[in-house]
Image (cartoon, rainbow, N blue to C red; front, side, top):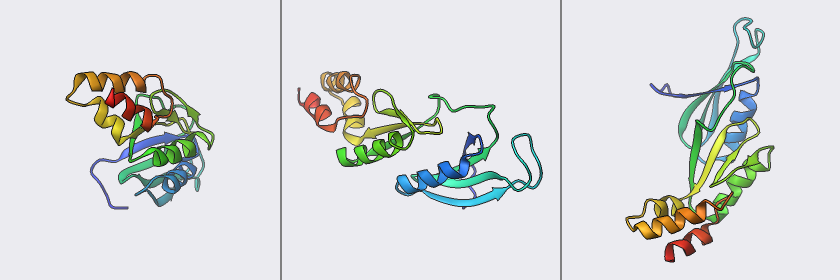
Length: 160
């Protein structure tokens, strides 16, 4: 992996490599880079255990740190993935939720490691930031009733 000045560090409890491999298989422009093993024993593991995993998610450089059970993921951090259509929205949503994750509201879901994702169709992002305040409100109100985003319903709300 190319060294970057800023890298997203995600804390895991021994599952960083599994998560990185899932993300690389699921999201475009995502890869697993180097897997680094601990050079010595540490509070969450033993020498030789996977300590750090370098990976990218949609081109964003990340490192997974197997730091132990002390810290959990929360909605305070999420990846927002913009999709082009309903098919891509469905594929990514179903991959996350169907692989031990769970649904939430307004396009949010959590993967089986507790990391939050916003699967957000481009049409929704454009709609809620529309210069037409009435159209933006209709799209926003429609979104507020959804779990996974329904592109056709957002488009209908935009039209009024």
